[in-house]
Image (cartoon, rainbow, N blue to C red; front, side, top):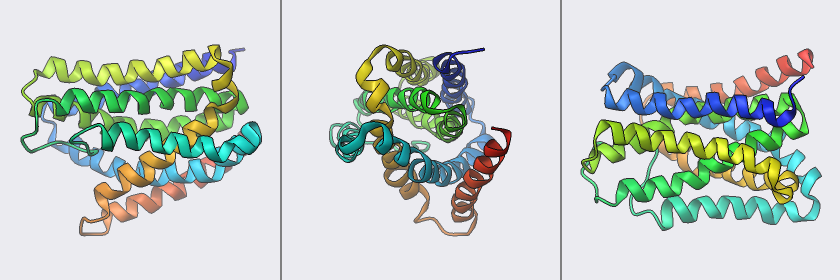
Amino acid sequence: MCSPVSSALVYALIAALGNVLGALAVTRRAARELALIEHFVAFGAGFMLAVALVEVLPEAFARSGTAAPALVLAGYLAVHLTQHTLTPHFHFGEETHAVNRLAGPSALVGLLLHTFFDGVAIASAFLVRPALGVMVFVAILLHKLPEGVTISSLYLAVGRTGGQAVGAAALLGLATLAGVVLTDQISFLVRHGLALSAGVTIYVAASNLVPEFQGKRGWKLPGAFFAGAAAFYLTKVLLDRVG
């Protein structure tokens, strides 16, 4: 039987491939796939927010105790610092405007912290119980595609090649795998990784993904958001029955 971290590594590898697939959709100008990925942003935001608030936060408080609130806040603030304070231009989704030449590399640095904690989240969740690990994996996989779109389109917008754009997305995937491996090696992450990851996940869902669609007209994207939250509950029921 696989250890929790071994299982987490397999799931993290699948999630990491989502970064590359998102990048390939951009470099190959797959219009239909890009339109579908836009709906992944909304659906993923609903699923992620539900997982973070209903499942991850209670477990984080149980594992980290009185330190949990500060750690959740630290995770939230760390992502804001790297993605929106130190990074001059960042938003989820395809970049279609001319941007500063530093926008691509700086966004990559900002996303590396976030994707590292994707791996920490998957590993920490599997250390609690497999069902939680699967739910966290699904939440992360759903935003890996738009993540790949984001970094690859930024790289293309600053004049980098398609290969470099896909390579940047692959680095994000590697950071996720590193998060899994290091969680197993660092005792602080074993105990408190879930709390830090909760803050990161809440930020990505509520502050990164939701603003990308909340100003757009129509009912499809809001519907996808609520469907994502509903899908979380359906997934939870199914996993509870299997478990």
